[in-house]
Image (cartoon, rainbow, N blue to C red):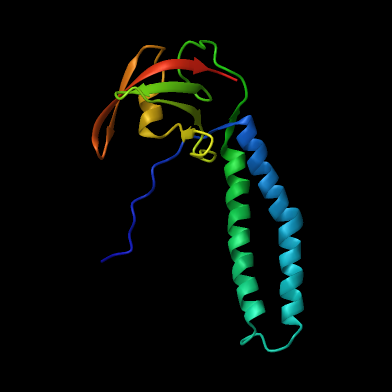
Length: 165
C-alpha cells in the first residue's frame, strides 16, 4: 500500500464579505493573542530544565506547530480569495451568495445560502458552491427543477424562492 494520494480537487476561490471578515478575525486572534500566550507558556516550560521529559514543553511545541500551520493556511488562503460583496446583475437567477429555497419531492422546503468552501456550515443553512446541490442550482430560476445524484439515488428539487441579502 502506497502513501500516494491524488491531489484534492481545486476549490472555488470565492468568499462572502462576512466569511472574509470571520477568517481575518480568526487570523488576527491567532497571531496577536493566542500565539504570544503559547510561546510564553513554552518559554516558561523550557526554563524548568530538562526538555526531553517535560510534557508542557513537548506538547506546547506541538500545539505551536499546529497553530503556525493554521496561520500559514489562513494567510495564503485569504490572499487567494476573491471577496464577492454585491449581488449579481441578474437577481432572478441563482449565483454565488444567493439564499435559495428549494422544495423536495415530499414537499419539504429547505433554505440554503451558496457560499465559498471556506465558510459553509450546516447550522445556518450554508452550503458550499462546490457541493452537488449548489452546482445543480447555479443559473437556475424560480420554478426550475434540479436533479442531484446522491448515494440514496437521484433526488429532485424545485426552486421556489431566490433572494440576495
